[in-house]
Picture (cartoon, rainbow, N blue to C red):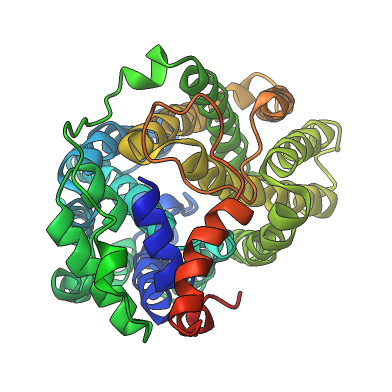
Length: 475
């Protein structure tokens, strides 16, 4: 698949086409936070609008249903990872994104009108599945269009919008105390994204792996035109359909030795990362300070965390960044177990530091996993990693229930897991500065982008006056 890689370099690493794609990917991320966290207190002030807990009477012997409802949502995320990951490798990135956006808008809005708590949980499960479809598939689409040098910048920009969404949630939930109106405010804007049908492109790399060469040529020419580049016919002719177009399968992740190692370690990394991330996020009501201020701080800290990744990923590489951040987030949780209950400020400060490390680690894992898996099984591999993360997300609210026996037990569990996972990441190969692999036959990480790859495109660029190089990315 070296032909499509060279053409994408000529089109531009991060031109106007890719910037528009990033813009399209960040918009849905704003609404994801509305479904991740929406908890309220369980006091019954008669003069205030009903909260989720008061309306469905989730107190006393029913108080554990709130954590179970969050676990059901995480189960939806798991279900979406299992369905939409392989489906995206089979039918394409674009249709899966469109389906997921429609489901999130429809069932997210429907939650505002449910009459019973069990219907609420069922709808939340579907919304969770759609969230997985959106986040995973947008990641793959952006990764496959954007060049090596700008890839982390683009992916982490969309993650920053998730953090902004958390901050918006804190503000709206403070002003809109009726949970049904809050659901409408968070879900209705998704219907405005139906214009994606006309503007969202398909992945050229995916089209080539499926043998759909003419479609790939058209979308590459459109990208070049948007970036104000010209692709000569002889360059496009490098795209030749293979005699036997073989799709990757789930079994490839376990039958190929190098992919088995990546799959097992990355799945573990995603599990422990999700475990500590949601362990901290869902404990927002237990840190002793105002829930809205704590939620705002948790959202605000994610923005510098995501931007810090842009520097650390380029300066220290993916492997070291992933390992150090996981270990740091775990150590902070372990320290929290020793803080007295009458020190809420110290606990909240430490939890915020832990959330910083966990958020940065989560962003790193998205970039890292997308680069480790080849195109034909990228979504299947990332989907499997996401499944392990969702299992952790299901367990996280249930682990919180162990706090009934001793308040330090949940944080001790949330802290131990990422320390072990971070140490395992040392065994992974480094992908910083490498090109994407397209098939499963590679026994090693993709080759470094250097003189060989640059020479092929550089020769063509020189023969055309070097103009296409002017539209390469600047981030």
